[in-house]
Length: 543
Image (tube, rainbow, N blue to C red; front, side, top):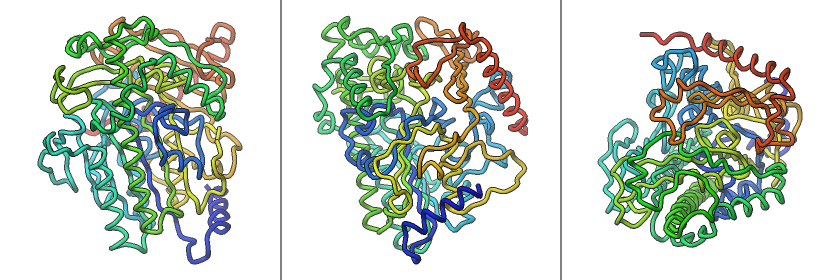
């Protein structure tokens, strides 16, 4: 990291008075199931003025990746390792009891714990989905919000490890607001009690993950906006992306054969005649289906709108503290928008107002395809629609660029090394392997040399590897009604490798495997080489 350390010193020296040349604070904001195109600054029509302002005052990455699923992304983001290296996602050829959502090796330390050695205090607010307890992993305070019953009925949530009373729906507490409230409280406490120390605030929203829950006033802003349908919405978003220069040159075709990744026929039946489990052309839907689908998208938009408003309150708190200038803000999504359709938690009352506590709605594959514009497929798949994430980086005191794009290819494994570099923390030798991620600090100045030789992907039978602009994909053959279980998806026989040239085809429309079998063999060998290495590095789980 020596070269990057020099750049950090130059940035800090150029942008800050001597008495302010101190390590930056960090605010990492993670949305849950947000599509690549949902925020306004990535082509969306949803009102996200706070995210848009962060982008205007900083950087937007156009080729940044997640792991295609919530818990693997969080494990990778907070450690700097691939999820399979640290037993936080399954791996073909390994007992799922040892990987999957397993216990991290001792050497897979969270970034919060590493930052403590540099004098940082760390705070967690919202979703956790990582093994262990936040307070045992470097966080000084934590609020863990549970999403089992939805956004209005908060059960199983705790504060600093102490279980809290349930929030009943009639109390009107929305999880997105409660999560921001806790982050603001942590920052206020930090300003009052530890103003001399830098901080790391990890703000992990559940929104806009299902169930789709929003207040009536938030939904009203979007109620009829989506009646023209997902086909038109995709075209509108893609046109804006082209104007912004963030999306390549092609819009993917709708994959009508791909519905929800898992089969929940009883849940779909419970949702009624308006539910649709395929992204078919909008004109083929009847009026009831169009109204129901448009209402779901309106709620999805309302949840993002509300999240942006709450982000605005957190940013206002940083301004009040005089800390925004020297806080590195990262905003990203844990995976692409979701095609899932199910009913869980408190169930679904078809007579309750859509979006209220009595309902249980999921976005589904139609508007999920629009949310992931211009890419193919959704969360759980390793097509671009499942793994491409918006990433905004904002740091007025340290990044001179304003409203610029960065096309350097990166991954959530790069967030922790970036923070450690800026904090002046040397990871050094340890019992584990070197961090898989690379610091993004050189990219803050400009695009340059690639950060990675390749990026590796696997989730529930779906596998991919990107090397330069070449990407191979190996996808399990989905059944007409999805997999009955995760285990069934893991055991499914994968199809053949597909090959795409992402420099011309990030929409993954033109499979070049037959034309370039040599490139397929090269990348497939690399994928398997890394699989074997990750298994060795993770080691067997101690019984």
